[in-house]
Amino acid sequence: MPHEPLNEYWSSLIVQVRNALKLSQQAFATKLETTQATVSRWENGEALPSLHNQQLIETLAGAANLASISGLVKIVNASPFPMILADRASNVLAASESSGFKTGLSIIEQTPAQERANFEKFAESVIASGFWEGDGRRFDYEFKTGDERRRAVVQSIMIRGNVYAVVQRLDG
Image (spheres, one colour):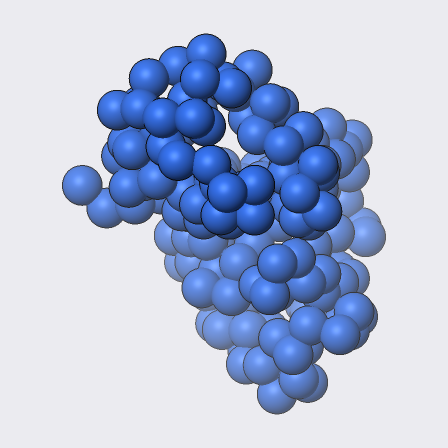
């Protein structure tokens, strides 16, 4: 079974939290009132923690001074504006309802065929701009589809050494 992007996120965060707090899987499981086997499945990306457990893990991450993307995921998901959060591989990690995108799929999979060439040019421009260096770079983009002109702003955010892109469509 392929690992979903958020499973990998939680897997990595759990390992980092356990290491930072010097907890065994069993001790971590006890804090979350679950089993060591469940923690193992989370760490292997075989299962996703429940929302309640995600909140507890975020609390433990904060206690260990570890940054996470959970708050950003919540902001993007709740945004009334067309907005997505994506990783470097163009996987959608969070999406506002108005964006039309679904989490767990790549952007290219969700881009209509007639717009894929625009997306590929956009992705190349983002790479060429040095965006993925993750120092808070902003990238403004505009393209035309037929008579329609679209604009977006893309902001890089680095969390725990990983760079993510928050993309907000400005005309939509």
